[in-house]
Length: 149
Image 1 (tube, rainbow, N blue to C red):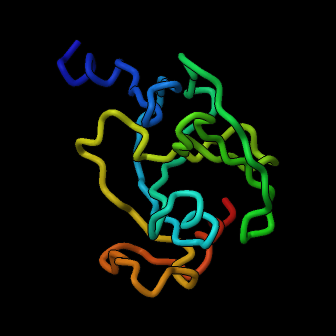
Image 2: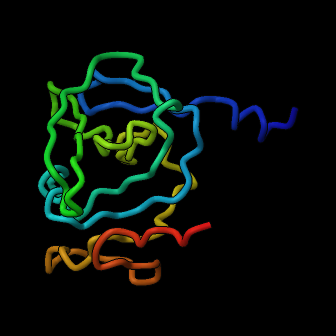
């Protein structure tokens, strides 16, 4: 087994600001996406929420329990926002109609090395002062659906 294989086998860890919530993630973090929709701005208190999609089966809370707020997203899909009930740190969101996938808030990860932005979505909703990386793919609304196989 190489050093790289050993490192890949270790779960990623993360949690909230106050430490009441801790989690492990056994899936790799790949494409980071910045979401500039109004709801993400309000939920994060910043210009965008930086997220990555991971399988729900690869995510495990090891300490604490999230609180949840549900609201329809700009797309119209019901969205569950999971956060720390003590400090308010956002941890993940999940479409209520897709329990197989989590949208992890990348800022909650302990390990940030080697991560980079792959795309920006809902840029038409961005605040006028938002800094959007135009060197990456930018979508005025959500990402387009993949073509049928």
